[in-house]
Amino acid sequence: MPFNYDFRMRIAAPRPTVFERLLRIEHLSRWFCGWCRIEPKVGGSFKFGGETCILPPEGRAWETTIDEGDVLRRFAFIWPIRSVKTRATYELEDGSNDTTLLHVSHRGVPIRTTTCGSVLDAWRMCLGNLKSIAEGRGDSVRPDHSAVTDPDLKLSVLVEAAPARVFDAFADPKQLDHWSTGGMPTQRAHVDPNPRGQFSFGWPEKGPDHVLEWIPERRIALQSSQAPRHLRILFEFEQKSSGTAVYLSVVGFALVQTDEIVHERGRWSALLVSLKNLVESGDSGFAKVDEDQIQGN
Image (cartoon, rainbow, N blue to C red; front, side, top):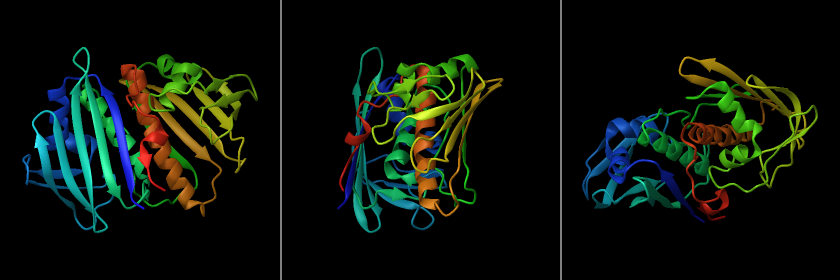
């Protein structure tokens, strides 16, 4: 059965600005792909490739066709994936105070996972970066299709804010609840910074972790409460001239757990983009919960 992906996002930028970020090659290379060539008209070709695509190209590049367009309001293209004609659509509406409500759908996708993790997380990474650059900020974590060669998962993101502000997004349950869901709080996140205290991102499929170390503005170490119980999650915060670098390490996988490592790499990459957007703009952006962003088995 094919999968349908559906996203709604709040972007603090006018509709013409967001629409331009969807079509101009210098912007697309910062959030959607590594490189592209595009004829922005109905019937025009849209070729894209590079190492940061949602899906690695079948050949040198994806060759797609723009099949619908309405200037500043709508843009759609046919994207053949494994010989299946999927369709990606962007629709833009005006929000209040020069903001844009963006609706993105990708229908008929024949796969749920790819070499950078889930297709869902890859889209969330890309759209999170779109929000950031449309609002005049920097892009960050992109899809990573490289082969797993190390059992320890390591990621990093630069957040344009002071360490105290970034750390607060972990220490405050309300902020944690916001970025760990992409912007749709569930009121399930929990923070007890004391030794062996419970720390929960609020995900229903995962129980609370236990605090091993809590050094404000510098370090958070957690012990997983679920199998494999030896997993440790470490966040380290380092002040930089342009903000704070957040270094994530998830330690304890066996190298044979390649699929699980890739899945976690994709999930945490999307979450770090969400964290960056919350801290820098006050909103991670997504207006639909995770389970409503994908339909299919």
